[in-house]
Image (cartoon, rainbow, N blue to C red):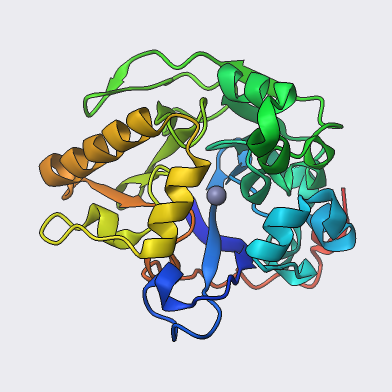
Length: 290
Ligand SMILES: [Zn+2]
C-alpha cells in the first residue's frame, strides 16, 4: 500500500500562534485538513475529504459563521480531486471514502467522487441528517454530501485493536484499514487506523487538535484550539476520556503506531510527500475524468 498525506483545504483564523502554536500572534494561523490517499489493491481509498470543488465554487454552502471565523481558504488546487488528478489518477479510481466524521471541513469533497462508497458510523450519519440544534446545522452541511448514494453505515463495535473496539470488516475495503470509535467531538466520530509499509498509522480526526495534546512529557494545547474543541464537542466528557485513551495508546504502543490528527500543520509536515510516478506518454486514459 502506498500512502499519500494531503491537506485538502486550509483554515486561517486570525490569532496566529494562539491557534497553531507557531505563527506570529497578530497574523493568520495555518490549520490544515490532513487527509490520506491510500493506493490499495482494490483501488484508491480516501480517508476524509477536506473541502471540495463545490465549496470552492459555492462557498455559501458553508455556514457563514465558520466561513468568516475560520477564514477558510478555498482553492481548487487544494481539493482532493485536483491533487489526485495531479498524481495521475481519475476521480473514478477512488473506490472508497472512509470518514472520521461528517463536519464541513472533512466531508466537502465527498460529492467529487460519485462512484465511491462512503463508510461512516450510522450514528454520525443520523446526527448529520437530523441537524439537531444550531451547532449541528452549522457543522453538518447536507449540500456537501446529500446527493451521494453509496453510503455504508457501521455500528461502533467489533474486534479489539490495541485495547480499542474497532470495526475490522469494512465492506469492500482491504483489512489493513479499520474504523476506531473515538466519539466526543461528534457523536459518531472515529479514528481511521491504517497498516502501511512502516507500521500502523492512526488518523485521529478531531479527537485532538494540537500536537502538544499527545506530548506525553509536556501536555499542552493552544488557548484557541482548547476553546474551539470545547465549544465544538457534542459530548465533552467522552471526548476528554477518548483523548486520554489516545495518550495511553501512545505511551504503551508509540513504537508501533504513529498518531496524528486532522488539523495540525506540523504533524502533516513531518510526513514525507511522495512525488507522483512519471506518467507514460501513452497512458492517455489517466487524464480522462470520470
Ligand atoms: Zn475538523
